[in-house]
Image: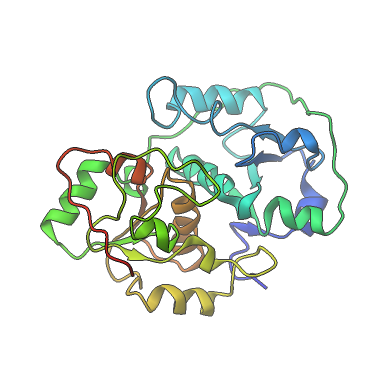
Amino acid sequence: MTTYAKDVLVETDWLAEHAKDPQVRTFEVDVDTSAYEQGHVAGAIGLNWKTDLQQHPVRDLIEKKQLEELLSKNGVTPTTTIVIYGDNNNWFAAWFFWLLKYYGHKDVKLVDGGRAKWIAEKRPLANDAPSYPKSEYRAGTPDASIRALRDLVLDKVVSGNGTKIVDVRSPKEYAGELLAPENLPQEGAQRGGHIPGAQNIPWATAVAEDGRFKSADELKSIYGSKGIDGKSETIAYCRIGERSAHTWFVLKYLLGQERVRNYDGSWTEWGSLIGVPIEKSAT
């Protein structure tokens, strides 16, 4: 049982009891953007990661003002406990967690096991979208210490200053045989491969069979065996940043490593840049 991070990780029992509390706001963020409409936790607000959490047409996170508008519309205040769950073992739930921390929200929690565990336990699903009284949310100054932009990553690679880089994609993506997970269209980057020096630790190695996170000892062994022990700064990346947000959450909040960044540009950016170094060797 993952009972070692109660401040950021809650069980489905907790969600069932607190989802509608006045000081709690629950959000569902799925890879499959139609999943919410097929049934969700009563009181949960559905967010579409493509349209609600990204800028358009520029590729970037939503701006501070946009987040303020989104959370104000849903009655969130700076003291609200935000609880997030989603499909695919919380890929985009973890990404939204990371985005909220980037903009300084203090009390954010993930539901261990996410949507799949809720459904597996045959818990009730609602079909109505809730509404809440509007608030006046104010976000904080972006926390640049938890985000890696491409120039920073390139500088770390070129300088060889000891920063650890973790590629959380599948081994075939890491080796350059695929550009995306096998079940997705093979597009999004001009070249396959990985950032030089990156260790391949697929995100799924952190998850147990029931969809919850593995124990702290197991996680420490998984990452420590590849030299990701918190003694130096770590940058995680994947294809578009959501799987690496999942690993960022593990390293920072479940293992307590202080200097961890998510490179949300990830391989769709790096694999299309002119002149950056790429490796294609297997693990």
